[in-house]
Image 1 (tube, helix red, strand yellow):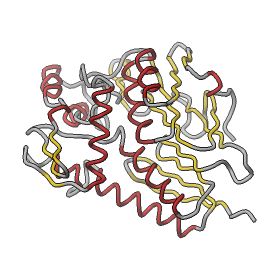
Image 2 (cartoon, rainbow, N blue to C red; image 1 turned 120 degrees about the vertical axis):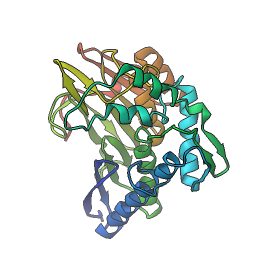
Image 3 (cartoon, rainbow, N blue to C red; image 1 turned 180 degrees about the vertical axis):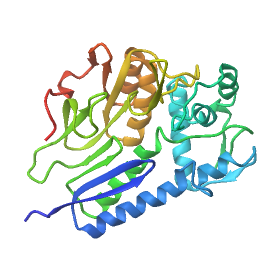
Image 4 (tube, rainbow, N blue to C red; image 1 turned 135 degrees about the vertical axis):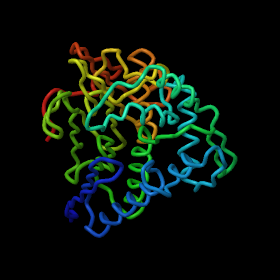
Length: 306
């Protein structure tokens, strides 16, 4: 007998979170409680969160929970593996650009250089659960936390016997088994500039694992007919300008895929593909001239997601 599919919606980590699963609604509500729990740890804006405490410690040590330490360890590992294209220590730089301002403005180049000087993630000190950021540094886990949380919520559902579920945390997709009828989930790859959740340039299929897309079209502002998007190159302090519109990563670990998608978008296809392969992930690169580069041609299928 098939278990009824139910869905729940929430808004955490500054994005819409949707979970569809073959389970009762009470279990889904518990998933959202778990999301709220992690937001209280990883949010940079909630006073008293662990990220907030680290960012306001003025160079002093802060005791963090085990989950925070694990996420920091993973972030620093990928920082090294990606030659700094994935960097959680760019909090000051992100604040400087302020992509959510009602009246956006380009930052002063001198201040960009000052922000870069405060973003050397290799200077973060971790000793057990004691963490110290250099004075003036601020971290931002927006490029990895959603993936970590999706993994944890997925593990929670599995531990409660769920065998068919799809999680969508703002583009971080996690599949627990196929649909109840045994067919794969079809995942739409968002068309840049299209209506979110409706317009796709291609689809892929997923029965288990994760798919994460990072794109330059999601957030930004326009000045003098030039688009300044939110994906910053930590090495230059400016939005990435390599012709890429999006990078989609498929793998088994959403935390890893989340970070690799960001790094690969900064890297460009050759180096980004190599990084993805090092973490046993598959990658799809979509360029503004219509080119699609992937090491796995069967990964994408033309058409809509149903």
